[in-house]
Structures are given as structure tokens and as C-alpha cells.
Length: 147
Image (cartoon, rainbow, N blue to C red; front, side, top):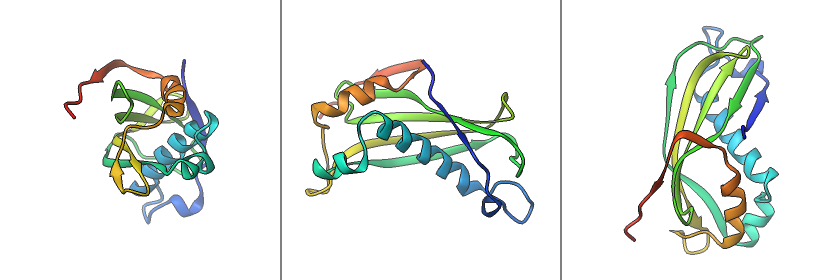
């Protein structure tokens, strides 16, 4: 199974050197993650009704190639690691141009938060089917959580 979305480069995404500015790469990853969750039943209405939201602890990009205005871009999503309850996770994106050139790799570490208590939480069971559908990386591993 593979999950990938095509992303359009806008004029406003460019920096003074006429290539995509660094923060746009992060926006692409976030957009693809939210699209996946929404397509799998975890839209904003469901999350708000259940006082649940994803949060990030770390977001890192490794930049490999420039992206220009006319490039065709796709962004994929894989799950690198997570706890058995999906309370904490690491996801990764490859940003690919023109079908086969990896331009960046974005890695995010995150968790679920109770938006009322403002504390980390184990997500309700309705989250599991969506998280189960995220494609696994080749080196996927389950994380152990002590508490």
C-alpha cells in the first residue's frame, strides 16, 4: 500500500532565488498528513467532538534538491514507528519531483493531545483504524512506552 498526493507549486511558494522556500516543504507534509487522516474518518469535526488533536514534538527536513515553479511534485506518507496504542508516533514524507527525484525527506515525531485537559492522551479506539491504514516504512518498528 502506498499513500501519495500531488501538490501544486504556487508563485507564493518561491523564495528570492526562484525555488521553493524551506517552510513550504513542511506545509506540504502537514497537508498530506491531514489529508490522510481526513480521508480515513478523522476530520476536524470528529476530532473536535472528541476533544482530540495531533501535536508535533519535532519536525525535521533533509533537503536534497531544489524545487522550481514548473516541477510536478508528489508527497508520500509512511509510519516509521509508533506505540501499540498509537499514542506516540513518527511519520515520514518524501517530497518527489518529476516522478523520481527525491527533493526532501521530512520526519515528524508526534502524539495525540486531549484538547480540553491540554495533556497527552491515548487516543480513543476510533483512531486505530485510520492509524492502521498508514503505510509502514520498510524499517517500521513498534515503540515501547513506559508510561
